[in-house]
Length: 414
Image (cartoon, rainbow, N blue to C red; front, top):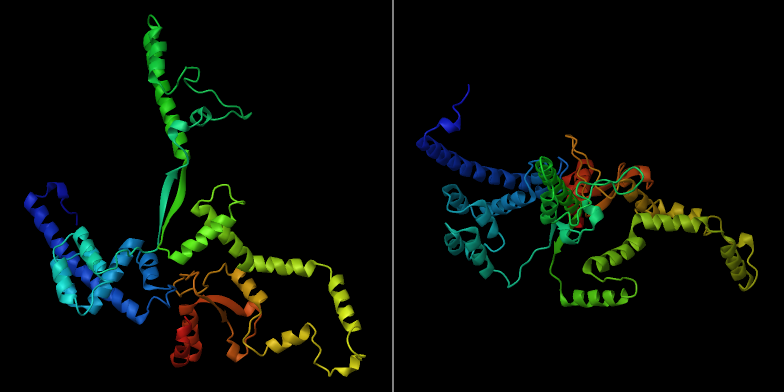
């Protein structure tokens, strides 16, 4: 059944309908928050392939990051202090103001704080919250921004003009022979020298030239935009000392010692030493080296040892060859570092859990090595029997195999 277009509604119908829908929206919002609390309490997001309630709200419910956090924080307020739901339904508070007080709302100040934020704007509530927090309470934050690589006024002429020819030379553009293509006065001067009927055509052509030049200049300016990330965090005195020390040590390596360059150099150094890819490359390099020098060292050590050492003096199975330690480790839970690194590289450093709906977790933090055939049931340490799992999904697998009672003993490891 088709509905009458809103443009044909009377003013009274529009206002009354909108008011009724907003009232329903507030009731629905409170119900959504209560359901978010229940999903979080039961950890229902874990079997579905999500690592947290935030991950579930953003990836499955399709909230933006900020919308998800507002709802999660507001849901926690309602869970701890149910009377706040009544304020939200009545419109005395909204999601933003309710979420702002989540960190500072306590049993002691609940009555006073909820009353103070009633009917207040977000800015007013931010001021009230600031009274209950330390002087500086900035969170770690990463924000995507677009910045200009250089000023549009400093663009070279080649960046503003048209495309290049097939031979790589600069293709001519309209107005290229003018004294200053960015200055409209130069076009007027040239057009003013035309006479007769050609003057009007020249004036129209000049206008087109100016439009083309402006369009090309805007296009060239857009190509200079660059994606950057604005990072915000608080640092202590020890951090600043180490940062200044690192900048001093890098002064001969870096031409510009901006925070970005310094952090990048330090991260390169760390990843080179500790990433699975780098460690695996070093193992391959060591394995490819000739063993003559190591054999010579072993022979020299044997020559200077005291007394003869017959080959039969050692009991069978006690020789410290390559197979001995490896066989000994098979009976322990220790996974060789080379195998761990192989699994990390194969799984791209992400949790491999996939839910029955096809959603993969993909978490990159708190990763653990999980045995496909459990170690306690004879599973080995070969890479084919290993996979990456985040803490929550590793525990979920343990609950499936051994039961929740046994798995709960290892919850502290997450």
